[in-house]
Length: 113
Image (cartoon, rainbow, N blue to C red):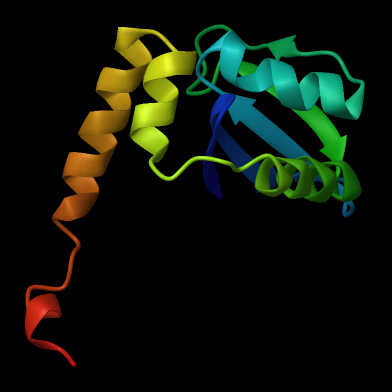
């Protein structure tokens, strides 16, 4: 699961060995700090892996973190909000993701009623 919040970009997957645990991963430290703080756990660094920062958390902590993110949602444009919170490098990456995902838009969306 990929999630973009006000704190950044996270990838969450089921832990391979623990049924009720998740591995939440990030490419930058700033993106993962908030979930580590929320779950009161340490950030593990895996240099050389696809996501160098990871936390191992219970499913309940992930649900609570996402609920908090929804409760704090007070903006009407995500990319604009992130320009206030993150640096140009992160925001440029967001714009690239937006642009690539535009390719998946239904071609006939404007003709549907």
